[in-house]
Image 1 (cartoon, each protein chain N blue to C red):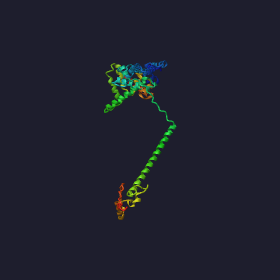
Image 2: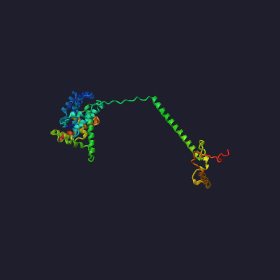
Image 3: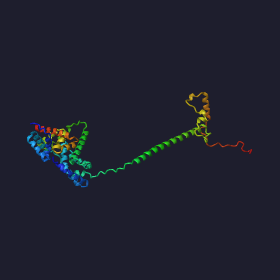
Image 4: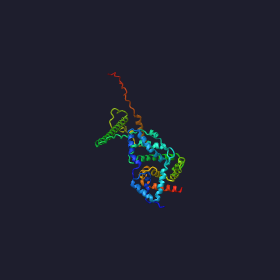
Length: 191
Length: 185
């Protein structure tokens, strides 16, 4: 038996078995079958498999339907209107102003803090004598030059070291705010 | 080619879907009653040995909860086959994981199909079953969808996630193997 080479007819055989061919196609396929043993064998196989539809359990339709949830339409999400170009520019400008303003504020605060530190250092340097009149920017080293030195203490000469220790012993780091009461030595008796 | 019975029913399927969306639960009953036998047959043909009713039920639940994504470009039955096939693949993956120590090969689903031994009584059915056993899972899916369900190659390609050309090749190879098997029996 020769194998059929008309693949178009072969592919239509299941449609013939299901009765889904139009009239002209059905007549064409049937005419071919009359003269083609290979396709007749194919048709027998198709009919056999189709008729021997495998056993399948019957489905409880009502049970299936009970499991189906009620229909819930998909509601499209509310779309927010697109921002206009002007609004986008305003937002961008606001952001830039906020960044620059914040940066400036931070810079000015840092300058103030530096000045305050310098004032405190000045007050400490003059032993509290200039507590009330410390000039801005006054350095402790200008008031007590011997207290300032660069490098290691090993670099100091013996005389410098002695001078430093003397200054330190005389340095009053915590000046009393309350002035000591002044008593007239003569008691005012002469007045 | 004239429209298949499924295609004739396609408009009615769409009408029933609209009625169900409108709150008519009887429309769902009609749809399930119309398509559940074919889904059950396809499941068994594809090698599902147990839980076919649960599989069909899951298919309908999945389909009805996502009916808004059904655009009617294919028939409802084709769409249902596609959903059912995905569920079957998920099941098989889960089974493979549960028996991870046993290497799973393509022929495994053939042995699953063998569980139908006690269900098929007649000799002709037994012969057909054995001939289908000789096919690869994809060949068997394509062949049964074409011969038993009467789907077109385009619909089959949609269901199995392949091309029409590949479906044709699988069909031709399958019918040759089945023919040889039945001849040599």
